[in-house]
Image (cartoon, rainbow, N blue to C red; front, side):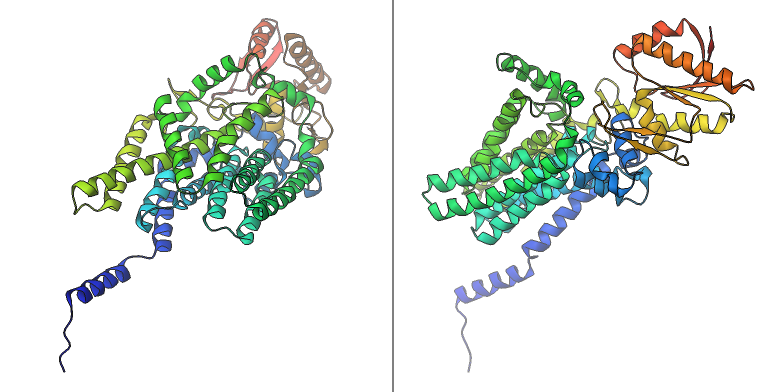
Amino acid sequence: MVTQLEPADVQRTGAAAAAARRPRPIVLDGIAIALLLELIPVVHDVKTMLTAPYWLDEAWVALSVRFPLRDLPVTTSSSPIGWSFLLRLVPDIDHLRVVPLAFHGLAIVAAYAFGRSLRWATPGRGTVAGAACAAAVLLLPAEQVRHDLKQYTADAAVTVALLALTAWTEQTWSSRRLGVLTVAVAVGILVSHVTAIVAPCVFGALVLTAAIRRQWSRLIEVALAGLTAGLIIAAVYFGISGRGRNEAMQHYWDANFPQVTSLPGYLGRQFDDLSPLVGAPALVVVGLLVAGVLTLITRDRGATAIAVLLLPVAAIALGVARIYPLLEPRTSHFLLVTAAAVAGIGVAVLADRAAAFARRRITRTRPTLVTAVLCTILLGAYAAGNSRWYRFDGSEPGLYYTAIDVTDIRSATEYVATHRATNDVIVMNNTAWYGFAFYSRQDAIELVAPYGNTVGWWVDMPDRPDVVVIAGRDAAAIRTGLQQALELAERRGGNARVWLIRSHVIGDEVNAWRQVRADYRIKQVSDGVEPVALVSKG
């Protein structure tokens, strides 16, 4: 018997075979994420990031690793305790910046999930959208200046991850997904204090959305989950993190706590300062952000859109209330990365709409391919415009510089250790002390806490009576410190020399040293950005 096949049957068979040949969406996602992560060492100067010496704000963080684990609640200071614990898992303490580098990668993965989780016409277009969202984060210039040993990359990764999980929870509502979001908040607060800002925005948005839709049982469920998350955040903050908040730290951030009356002018100045780190004209950024938020709304991610809009509102409120610094490049890094991710969604939807328009005009057009090409063109133009930022090593003349490029306490410490005699004396400014203690690895250290500086603790080196630390940064304190060092050298005898180490000399301290130099003979004996000198009486 001969079976006759209808044309429709042939078409269905061909479509089924084509579908079978296509990679599964999860495979496409894995390939896309792998390719994006492979671009990190292309865009970032990973070698410099992992090998550069630690500067002041990093030195005390690195030094905390050398203390016993029982001291962690104190030595973590203003760093989240989970962040400080992760640093202890790194085998080589010279490569501790692998932790912020890992969170760079996690932010990219989270951004991919964020863009991918929206309702796109085909899995292929979803992959393109996820890649566009992640690429916007990868290419953001602000990411280039966050190579330091601080939790700011974790802030960004946790924020984008919580938004992605919120979108995922909205996609198919279930108690399990809401539970995953709550657990993510509990984990996030351990590595990022910003979780305490993002979580209320997320749960508040979910409650508001449920109320608008009159989904009362869901509202109760979300409220209970939010309360649980809030209790966990409060327990971590009041139990551990709150210790890092002190009067000296508050004073340090004074300039980033605007008054209500000065808020408009402050916001204008900060936006101007942050503009180079964004890397695109303000109108373009605003347009893409609007497109991204509208996409969240039109694709049934209303709570996620509300959470995105609540973030800047919460940041402004906390800044005015003197609780959290407002629009400072480090502490507000999470806002810049979130903006990049939302703008990336804006890029994807504009390209998707253009592809749909092209399909209506040219029937053989492949929308996924057109969307991918348009995203590549738009993001490629963004990358070309910011090309000077990529592989940033700490300094790009005429563009930007960070402390990594202008401090080197490691070389100074090693030079003195190699060249000093046993009866010599070492004198240093107090901002060099944490780094000196860290790089003097053969010497014992003892924790001194509490202490009245921004860190909240100090370090003592009981086996180093040859070291004098200058107490202050004004001319009087410097003279007192140098005089103590010279007197100590006289008591130690044997033609003892006085070695001078200075690090992170900024602001008024620069002028103070200029005043003091005239009273002493200071001879530079090493090269580099922070050279060592020998001091003797004038």
